[in-house]
Image (cartoon, rainbow, N blue to C red; front, side):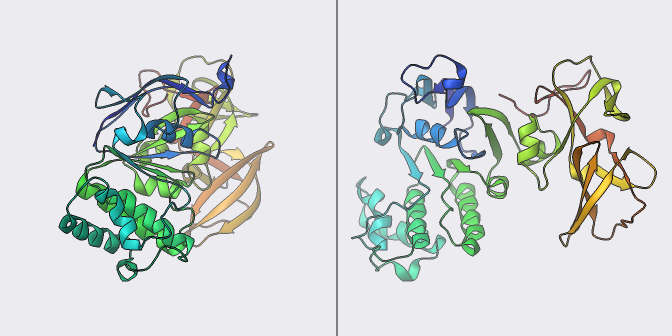
Length: 365
């Protein structure tokens, strides 16, 4: 296992970058704890795989350093970094049996056959392939081959880090939950440092101790699932995490009040004078439809999704989503929405600002 330090790290695919916009990965300075499980979460093209490949040594950064436990490995090849990486699409040896594929990383490092056999059997049980060990990999389905790739990544106990680049993309949906559970168990049992790249918020939030949210080549927040939900440090975090995502409305903030369009709402705390692009953000879970209190809205439709209802409304040209309980009454005369003041966040130029006398909860880049 290893503590991973990103020191002044940035990368551009252009030979002579001249501005920040030329960098696929903006400057990063972070310490990732030894033995923690991280998920790199963001939309396609945000820099997740670029960062993972720099950590693994498959890509050399344009600037900065990578350190494992304080040792500079920036120039070290992948083999010397002692990591295991599982890619989005399966990488297996078709002419080998499943058993030999799983055993390969151990045999390559000279482990004795008794240990190899024991460990292969254990991993095969974890990935549900005990009855396929003697089959050749050629001809297996894509999801079976990916399970082999996952198993080969997990078979060694002595790695500095396990890196996963969207490894469940080709896995049959009913197997995804089971494999995520096995990865969590592996982390619990052996304490590997794990970094898991995904664009799926469910995968990220159920797998990781901390989620690293990336947007436009930048880490915009590192936090627990609770921190990302309660206090998104960037409007993208609020939008990307949650279903539906956070409501974001243009506002003018003055002290303990926010003027939204022609209406004024109460805030839980006071704010210093703000300038720039000022917005408030509130989760649909903390919005409530009523007959008499809050912003006047037009309800466009109601979606009953079983456990709750999603109310789609509009306020002066801005969409607002409201989540109501399955048994909550919703009637035609309910045309106002109020927000829980304790869960209204204020953003300036997309970054959350803390109220006077308070500090920001998340870890923003």
